[in-house]
Every structure is written in C-alpha cells, then in structure tokens.
Image 1 (cartoon, rainbow, N blue to C red):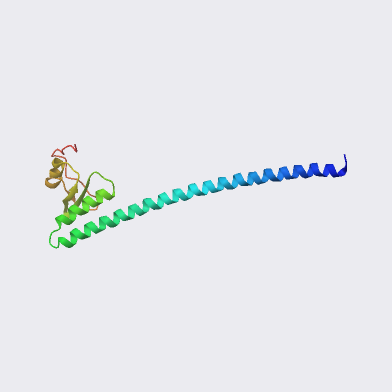
Image 2: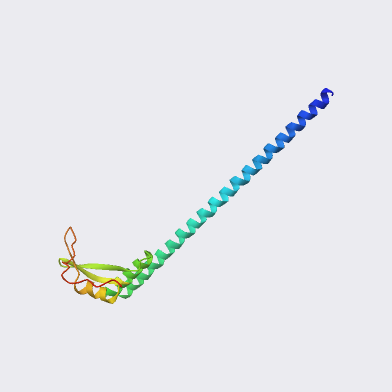
Length: 146
C-alpha cells in the first residue's frame, strides 16, 4: 500500500470520529433544549398559579370594600363578608372572628360552623382579654362539630 492510501484510511477514521462527535453534540443540544423547555413550562405554570391567586385576592378585596362602602353604619355585614372571604382565600371550611367587648372576646362572625356550635360560641364561649387567652371552664358541655 502506498503512503497515500494509508493517509486516506486515517482521514476516513477522523471523519467518522468527527461525525460521531457532531452527533453526540446534537444529542446533548436536544437534551439541553428539552430540559430548558421543561423548566420554562414549569415556570409558566408557577406564574399562572400566582396570577390566579393575585386575581382571587384582588376580587376578594373588592368584595369586602364594596360591602364596607354600602354598610356605613353596620359592622355585621362587613364582618360576615370578611370572615367568608378569609375562609375562601384560605380554602377553609370554617372560620370565625372574635371582637373584644370589655375584658372578653365574643364571637362576632363565623362561616361554616353548624348552628349548635355557633349558638354555643355566641352564648357561652368567650376568651379573656389577657396575655394568655383561656377558654371559659368546661362546666357547660360543648356541642359536637358535626
């Protein structure tokens, strides 16, 4: 074999080697692109979720402000709307607001509590206005939550 033939065999191997490297780089680039697309989609979902939450909070604020502007002399509708909105924003089934009256806190508004428990909270239960909040002694039976 001549020196020229040996050169072309080496050259062919180099070309095949270069082609294999180019293919590997292409595969790596596609993987990187795929990972980037996945990250972008996840980021878009996060932004969509945050936008939805912001819209929900803005709508809730508008609802509360609408009730406040329409109830200039009545606090109860405002408290009822506020507790219902807070429960909705927190995905809670039940919520309540206590107001301070003198030295105790009494139920002012609630959402989702059974009527018997609401009556119990309104009529019996109160918290003392002290650094450590304590419930009234359990001399009166508390109704079940169901």
